[in-house]
Length: 240
Image 1 (tube, rainbow, N blue to C red):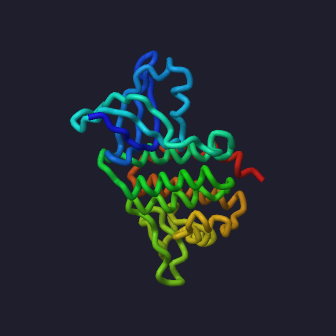
Image 2 (cartoon, helix red, strand yellow):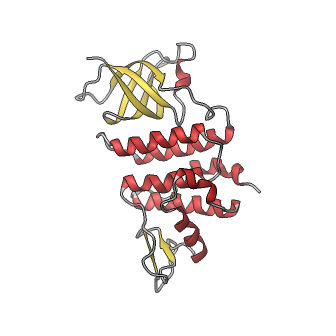
């Protein structure tokens, strides 16, 4: 039976001269792959396959298949600003790469889908804020099971990227953030999207926080070091 499947675009790969394999985090079935047959030769059809695009895919879905054929693919609603603001486009590229490298389960995860799709809508409809990606990543960590908690004691001033906690270590290792950076990292915990304007980081601090957040994701998800490099595209945003 044909159905309309809602999903978040993650990535696509060439399948033939005119077709692609599309990776989508769907609302109904989790991470799924679709063959978008002939999409390259249909004028304007491939334009929907962009970072932070919320898709609606017409499909006769079969759970026993690893690849399903997609029918017409359209946007759930036209983007307001993501494709027109180069700063938002760069942030969308980075965060979509994070989602692609983190979402591996072919199982439905309604809470993760709700968080991500809501965040995308807020990002698209709001004025650009240079701290959005930091708040997004901190909130996203909750759905992968490693969102940190605030320190329980005043002496716990170093955040451990390895353990995911604030502590007072006897020895400082390279996975411990400095006291100053740990304090900035702590400010992100629990910050909601409508509170982003209250964060006041300098550009160097923002860059350090982003590097630390990327390392945190890599360590907590067992990734190889430096497997995430897409955050480098954001450096021009952080230039003083």
